[in-house]
Length: 307
Ligand code: ASP
Image 1 (cartoon, protein in one colour):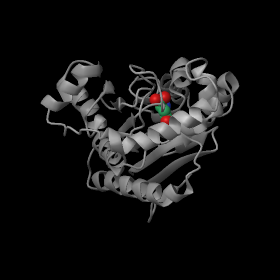
Image 2 (tube, rainbow, N blue to C red; image 1 turned 180 degrees about the vertical axis):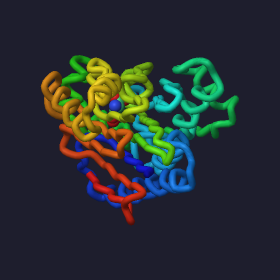
Image 3 (cartoon, protein in one colour; image 1 turned 90 degrees about the vertical axis):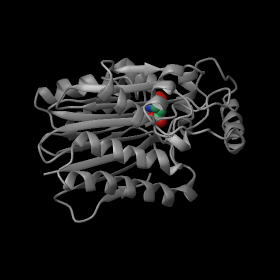
Image 4 (cartoon, helix red, strand yellow; image 1 turned 120 degrees about the horizontal axis):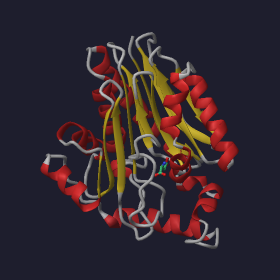
């Protein structure tokens, strides 16, 4: 059996005119992952390829569609983990790279490290042949100004950032992620994001932190979305692994973790997708919506839901 689950972020989905392009991106992403899995490819290759499709779509907050930080620049995070080898790769605050998830996979494959950040992560990616992409600030400026206006409605821009993010869930949706189970029973996870819109420059979220936003082992794979700081503080990925080791299915794990997020940090704090070694799927969130989809060898068509 093979299975793939993808998400396009938990948050508030208000731009209805975007729904069909997001649905299309998720469908294309599921098909990209599925074509690898059905031809006997690895879960790791499947999640990376699925996430690259979402990064390239330009309609989600990752890769070409990444949200700007507080000074209007693009700094992206991505992480991947291979449950079979228990190896991971990640990049934080990477710039001018078309596919941060590919850079993360190269950290896993070509180095002895887990996480590279900043300027040297960008240089590493370029040296490994990851396409360089010069983000055109003029295209992003209207979106940036709109975000600044909405953020300012909360009156404070710097103080109590986390409270504001909860009041304005549109500031953190559209991160992307995928989890997959391959025909050999191996699991993998990948997550990629432009991070919280208007984050402080230099801020790293949960997505590239292995054990927080991204995790996979022999029992379960998870990719989280929402306010990264909360996901880090809860250690969502590691908790998922422990719950799965204790016999909980991916569905139960996702529900338990979102209950815990809500209990500790309130509504609008996040969501996650999870997949276990038996093919149980978990999708949970405490935000108004989460773009998501799944496809498996037992289904004739992929299922896609937006928001
Ligand atoms: N979790 C991401 C971050 O905090 C944001 C998101 O999921 O939209 O960077």
